[in-house]
Length: 201
Image (tube, rainbow, N blue to C red; front, side, top):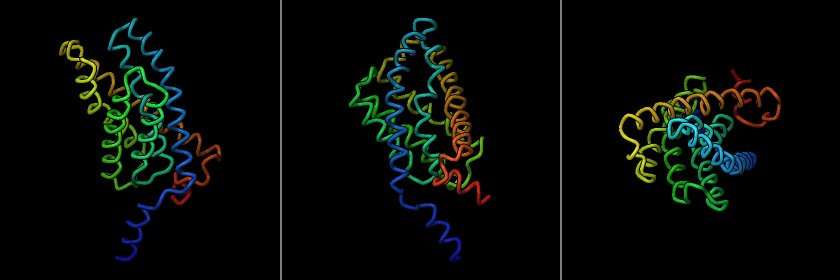
């Protein structure tokens, strides 16, 4: 019983300074990347409208999921996406300041729920793919209300949603797993849970 209690407590370890620094760095990098993604989004919109722009959805979310995969502590999404929203708001967003915080809130709720369901112990590819895809629908619903996606029509909305979920699965879930494992093998993450837990088996 005591061993189980200790395991439960260990899951909720306090964040280290390195954890906070990593989350802040990823959030800052995302803010910079978002500037370029906004420009790419405009190009894609001119080429294929809302369906084409939906293909890069996963890239907007990857920084938070990558932080979670590396740090593996409850609340990682809250801090990382929260910092990301603040930085994007200060830098300015083509989609408006409100969208930064609403999107972050949606991502936080889903990411925290997914990893809570697996009790912060499973970090396999299927789990990461699930997290990447699951973060899409709630934000899509709010974005549809905020940006008037309803005018697209039901067929386009459904196709766009499916494309965005697939983008979340591939460009967020899969890419997170690949990047996280590559960074772990490089030796750069020796002091983070992604390396320590793999070493422990």
